[in-house]
Length: 292
Ligand code: PAF
Image 1 (tube, protein in one colour):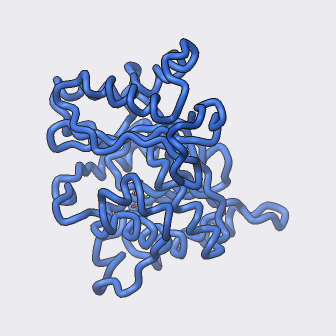
Image 2: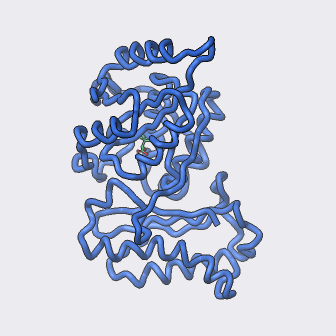
């Protein structure tokens, strides 16, 4: 499968596909899966969902420099375009957009898309400018591809909330489709960054998913009843891993991402709260979450 590097080529090929797949005057729907490559089963699930729901599927692979901070892993971010293209082809993706940094940012970008409030906590508070980089590149990609549906993984739940807000505020004619977190058999949420983990760190990283899965047991047994008790219990579980360095453990409303009164009963927030975790193992920062 050939990757398309130029914006005009992507537009031409997409226009042609739209024409070819128009049936009895009905325009085909376009599903878009934006990624930074090094694709895994989590991305595959997004492509499958897009394939199921849409007539044309476009995948983008672009390691977006403006969403990385100065001390983050831009240079060592894992890449394997050949393997990614083979997977996209196997899954029946129609077009793969693989632009260079010069194609996306021919001159230093003077326009940034900034979503307020939902970006100021969780990863937004720890990674200044990160979400401006995400919303700027996603806006550009939406303008280039003009999809009807765009598919995002819930592992980056804050990203989903931020993009949803941006789409509403800026009237992008696209429906955001959040897709479930995909996990290894032992529970570790799939991430391109998992390859950085040593064997020992990989084993210890299971404290993240374990603590999220244990929530039901702790609640049913009455061991935790309030937001603050649950938070403390999760922290305690994560700290059983010697290498875990907690960045945050937060329980917030979802999708608004506002603080919850720490003393309120967890039952009052069922289905409307998110437990969000970010934990470092060595230099690798992992995130995970679940809706309460
Ligand atoms: O989730 C990602 O991989 C990236 O943040 C995205 C949405 C492709 C923007 O660069």
